[in-house]
Image 1 (cartoon, helix red, strand yellow):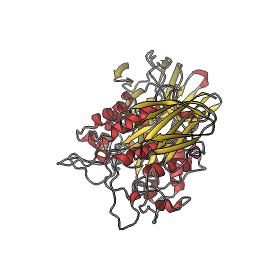
Image 2 (tube, one colour; image 1 turned 135 degrees about the horizontal axis):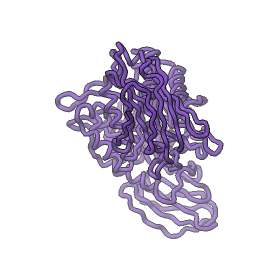
Image 3 (cartoon, helix red, strand yellow; image 1 turned 60 degrees about the vertical axis):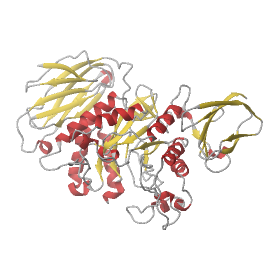
Image 4 (cartoon, helix red, strand yellow; image 1 turned 120 degrees about the vertical axis):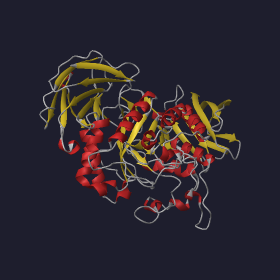
Length: 550
């Protein structure tokens, strides 16, 4: 029997019974998730005992092998997303005879205009991201580590997704299974293992993760799934680690809005970098949607790993990741997992040089640019962070808070270097800190985020073409992102006179206020040598300079 239903934005197919099924589904479309479901007999440990895959054959001899997964009781599922229109057929393989030999076919329509496809590194502009349909992706993320716990406990997790999207945030990073558990009084417990190994995996947590991924898709957001946390892999062992990774890939790989983060702060696991590179290679090799060929280039799905506070990306030379994830932020002056000050492992002792967020935010991106991949500072500091040790000049000084003003300057420093970032809300509310509790609150910093996103995503702004050009600006804390000969963005973190070395020509100049979002056209500016712009002091400003004629 063949049944076709609709669940929100995601079409779903359920195949019941044990008989071989063959059916044509004219409603299938490119980049829509199709879900196949079967029942089988009882197993003592289905999570470990049952293997299920399906081979899909498509137009122009396209072949995809997709892994299925156990989803509780006697239920097994397989999720598949078509990548090309035309007739597709499939046949299952399993060590369970009741699940092997299932077959069927799909007539797949072209993708609708509203479908973006999978997110990939843009090989034509390798410091940027792009969707399969060619739509640009200006990444700005938020962190909701414990949103699965919030969903399990009836928290305001839906409002957290929808509220973040309203401010232009288009990525949510979270642990793919339970991380914190709420207790009476609304405070989260200590960080708990997000995987429960015993009879299998923690299926209620996965069911909520499914809901979160789907809600993120409906709000135009990418779900950045963090698979492992700290030392969990030490506790479950290498074999179980790989089994769990493959389960997560099977369960979520078909969702076009999913991207991968193998581990959060991999150094804290105490496992060698080679171990984590191995898991990265498994993800890149076994994700059926990991790569596509277009215009003679291979476009790869977004995949990376998060590291502890340090400015230098540790996986240069590896071939499995698509982008660097940094943690350069308010903990710059703190001890690292390996002991000592992590900054001192970079090119210079930055803790004694950079106290301003715009400074180290900008530098963290610049240090890693030029290697042919996007650079994302996924933990530069959370809104309401109570301790900003990077601001301390000596150990005797009391630590400052990460103020709204410094948060704003930090993120502008990051993005004016051509990088991307993720924030999070760490203010302490009665129902917990949102970055860990997954609950929704609305501090003023979100408005600053929205203004930055709006500035870079205006019509006519081709941010993916722009490159850092700090060398054309005078003085400290003045930063430049340029499409040379066409357009220049200048961020002045503290105002005053800004002198730029611009090519001779006529320029249209607009001054933008990142605190309020207002723009003010300045008089047309002719340049024969250096151009100087006077900005109000003690506040941060942005100049948008466009070439009118040369």
